[in-house]
Image (cartoon, rainbow, N blue to C red; front, side, top):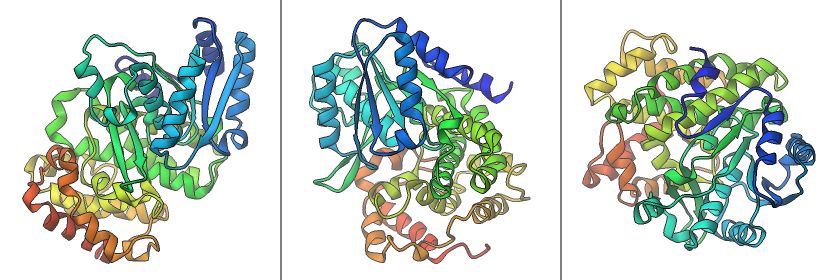
Amino acid sequence: MDATELLTQAPGERIVTDSPRRRLVSELRRRRPGRVLVFTGRHSADANGGRRFIEQAALEAGRETVRFSDIEAEPAIGTVEKMTALIRQEKPAAVIALGGGSAMDAAKAAYLSAQSGWPLAEHFGVNRYSERCPDAAADRVICIPTTSGTGSEATPYSNIVDPAQQVKKLIAERLIVPELALLVPELTNSMPETVTRATGCDALAHSIEGFLNVRADRANPDADGWALESIRLITENLPRAIADGRDETARRNMCIAATLGGMVIRFKPTGLPHLASYSWFGRLEHGIAVAMLLPGCWRYYLGNPSVAERTMRLAGLFPGRTPEEVIVSFRRFLDSVGVPGRLSDCSGITPELLAATAQSGPANRMKLESAPRPVPVEESAQILASILEDTWQGEQSC
């Protein structure tokens, strides 16, 4: 089964790679009366051609569009509340999120809050709305990703910044898995090299973390196949996309890989690399952070023999005769695409930040408990501090 066929396995969602504009026109024509509400970032929608793509499809479908373009790189609670108010005012025929993870996460959260009538804060957590209102249904967002990283177009997750506490807060809600995702590779062509690298590393971390999460194997028997294909596509195509942003094949394959990664973490969640980097927004690109943290976390996971066995299934992509050699090979791949080897070389990361990060485990118990090798809360500070120190010093074998 090829990669595009794997996308059809996403439960309860349509992921489209062929004739996306025609599919969008068809989707908008069948919707109830009303305007189409489009959420984007502040600048990229014009540069990448996404705004024109949507407006032309809406015109052909006989729809007017309304655009909200004030979503920041790390969407904050206040921004999502403004979006929620606009949705309630417009009562749109459709909500489209155009952009990277920030635009998609914010739109998913806002659309849910607008329909539930709840304050946004009440949705933070796992399935808060669907568990308290089991018969509830919700219209869902149409996503058009313009980066190849977060996979938000295929997940039930939304990460929103709480400025008062300077942390990201998570909504994990089955009702916000997008209804439709349109993959349009040419909209990713304008991504600069730095964004291509960071988003590609985020997608790679998603798929590796999910693949290693042996404790979640029963959640979906197809997820490991999605992960392996995603990892293969990224290792083959991320270097090409970094070298030449107009490489159509590389861009298409990275779009597919990122979406497969989103499908993976929908069922097999991420672990310690994501936990440790939650408070680093604005200091280091998220994808770079999780990729740098992954080797140290992976070594901790090897304490679970099943993870060591699972690691050897990646030896064809990251050559090695032992789990440790596979991890070293992974780190060499990161070197080859320009990911720093030491946190101490990253200007936004300080020893003080790492010390605070090591103490953050109890506030993220879900990540501690769902890791491939669980982290006892009472030992989390020591374990996280060791991983962070190793990543600060850098990989000895690179």
